[in-house]
Image (tube, rainbow, N blue to C red; front, top):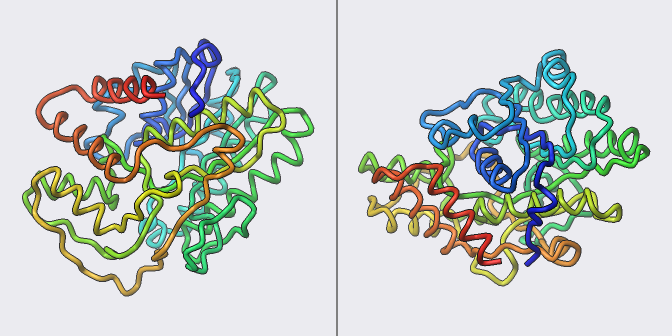
Length: 354
């Protein structure tokens, strides 16, 4: 598998949006370890506890800017006078059911927030590449079971999926109108469902398992037979960083790419993943409570062949291994080990296995 080049990242000025979130915190820790100078831009953490606080991520950044991307003047003011080499845009409203409850807020963050950021970045003169993270749910999903490829039609029947598909179109328009003519690659990455230590968000499967185990109550599942392209946060963030590195180094790098589990691994349903999790933590068996109003897809798979062919990158951890590593993080953190040490240890082991 392609490895990250520490010499490439050392000293790079990286703007990381969403650095207070779960994936963003892992990205900040990893980038700091590679020697990058990280400026974070995000809302404050929206859950307690938060990996951002537990791991002391703010202390790893050159600056931690608490800004709402929906506020265009605030975004432009925060970035004024700052120069960056690379941008990794991860900030988003990421929860499907939260999008159902607040579609306007979700579109405002995921679409206009991205537009506000890109507009502010037009003033940057030192950018080498920018990568916007969307989702595996950007595709028009007829639930045939076929794995989506990057050239497939975009769409979305729920507010979350539609907002991410719309964000893709917005990014493409800014790329073709402004950034690509100036020689600055701007691309999107479509990641599968991510699990890993330190996710305490509401309405996330692993966080629900951990909360249920610690409270000694069963996990409640809405769609236990649904399938998802599960991947560990290490695989996902490694893919994003490898892609951003390639965009800055190779003008011919594709401008959209899927990241998810490598093909041929076990297809794991929500129920099967939850069973692995509750067994690892010694929790109670899960319980099924259907939600007839849900718009979530029952089947979702993405084709990751483009990343393998063009970047030499593919995920290393299948779903059982990803669950085992995730639950090991939570067990050790509950027993008093420091969150930052656990993240760094897992990152180092992952890098060493390349």
